[in-house]
Length: 369
Ligand SMILES: Cc1cc2nc3c(=O)[nH]c(=O)nc-3n(C[C@H](O)[C@H](O)[C@H](O)COP(=O)(O)OP(=O)(O)OC[C@H]3O[C@@H](n4cnc5c(N)ncnc54)[C@H](O)[C@@H]3O)c2cc1C
Image 1 (cartoon, rainbow, N blue to C red):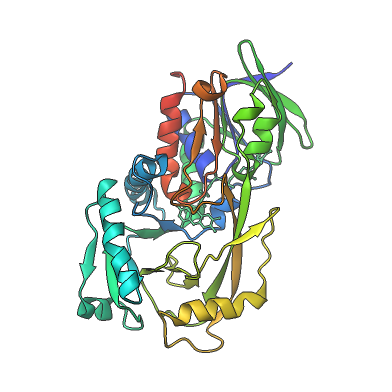
Image 2: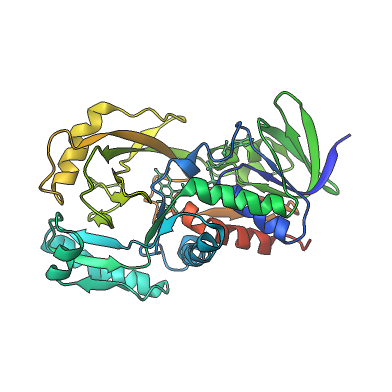
């Protein structure tokens, strides 16, 4: 006989944990099912930890809406829960006239999406903020920030547990089925079991497609293709050349690398973009020339030995489009016909920033507690 609960959340990454908290706060009995022996071991702990402001997402997209709301929720939640973060601001840096011509378009797109605080900086301001930066024109986003994602996940989990949620680790979901009066979720691992629930939130990141496809009653044609892209970081070994987020144009996935200080001040460069067939977190040291070359364009003072290999993450995408063009996919019964099932696909960047807003959105799509 299956155990029963109101809500099963599959995946203990930042999105699953935010959803679990949201549902527990709404009064539901929640069980979080995580395959690994700890939460947040995958994409949620292998990212840039940037609180994105919402500059360049397609107007009207889920990303455009949820990133703004998610940022607002994070800036409320973090101080209340002691989550380390810093509203450090982001400099979008054009190196030449051609790049500078792009910046007003970014500002206009941001304003269409409801973000009105971007400003062009004069050169003296930029030199004062970032003395080591080479630039032609800089557009500044004051509401961009950085966060400790581990602390965020622990705080979300703590809140969820304080409201009755239960976390099951070492519990890979292997499949399930839609029954007449709910959803059954099959859990493998040392103690196999089946959990029956009214609401099932599939927040398994790169595992979401496989789970949806293994669930009897979910039309296979509603499960999108999955595309994985690896992103590698190098870190400044002993220097702290920048204190703000630095985003050189041409921007994401081009030959540029981004700079992000972490909450302790260490400076990271990346991620780059490499197609991959699987979950591979190795860091190829032979990428060093690419990182030096990209960094030299805006950090002329960089010297040999300044960068060392960092870490890698894998973006769970649904197309090869840039992250700003490829929207989150949130499927409810209006798409797959299964009451109470929410499938989350392609939760790449800005999924961490949007996590609490995704949870609100998911909650709005589910029947009341
Ligand atoms: C390189 C990179 C940089 C990024 N930078 C940023 C950034 O700066 N700002 C930002 O907002 N976003 C960023 N993102 C995006 C952000 O990290 C993700 O959107 C977010 O972490 C997704 O969280 P998640 O919970 O959906 O996925 P995950 O963190 O991957 O969690 C999914 C969980 O599901 C579990 N799971 C998988 N299969 C199963 C199964 N069968 N049974 C049970 N559990 C299962 C996994 O073990 C995992 O713990 C970045 C992503 C990458 C890759």
